Length: 143
Image 1 (cartoon, rainbow, N blue to C red):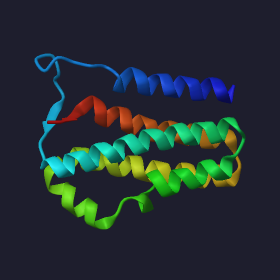
Image 2 (cartoon, rainbow, N blue to C red):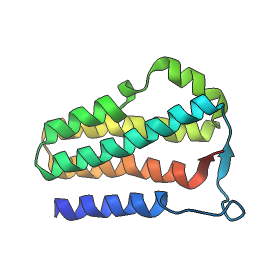
Image 3 (cartoon, helix red, strand yellow):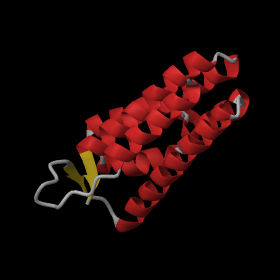
């Protein structure tokens, strides 16, 4: 059951993040920022996706403590360096920043639930993390 739910989560991410739209069909808000910041943001998002995969693998292996550690150190509120927050914030609309903070908070909540050992509650809270990823990628794109 848990593996099926993890598989569904991965498919949702691939479905929503994997679409390639032509510029004239892409209605997402374009976000412009200096090239170096854009590259850093893209690198962080790729690491977030990798962290989600590692969390799912840890959960599939019944290692909730490892999943918790990955979530907090790579996705949670404490994972975002303060200087980077202040550096990128001026380039992001308020609604995009809110989605990002919801994702980081949801990851910290997942980490707490996973560390408690309740696999079902942890998986449910992990869905909140990916929901924020999907919401952001559906609304915004880096220009």
